Amino acid sequence: LLWSARWIIVAATLLALVGVLGWLTGTPVRSLFPYGIAVGLVAWHHGMTAGFVFAGLGTLAALATGAFPSHEGLRGQELGEGLYTYIKLSVVVLGITLGKLARRH
Image 1 (cartoon, rainbow, N blue to C red):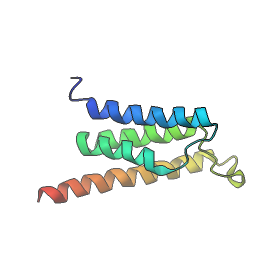
Image 2: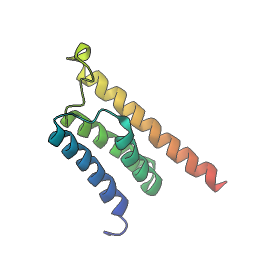
Image 3: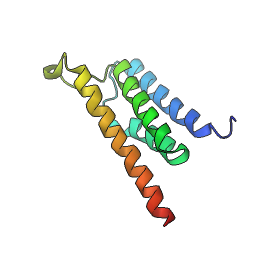
Image 4: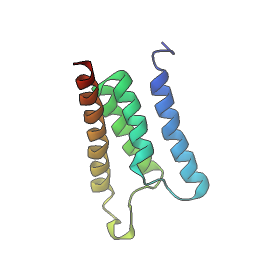
């Protein structure tokens, strides 16, 4: 069981490291890249459903570390920014899933 869940553990660790890095530096990580890597790893190794779950977890991790609002003009729009981030991470899941399907054929 642990061996089959290793990519989920790696992705969760990456999300935790992003959060710790933001907390230690006092500056939240607003780049989509580290969240996208975690989501992509899970989508590649565990499928689309797990990828969508991790897209949600990545969005919550970004929210928890203070990545929203992305600038002062969007204060009070955290829900909208969170939904937009979830959509972007979901596109990562779809891209990985479609790429994997195309690679098989």
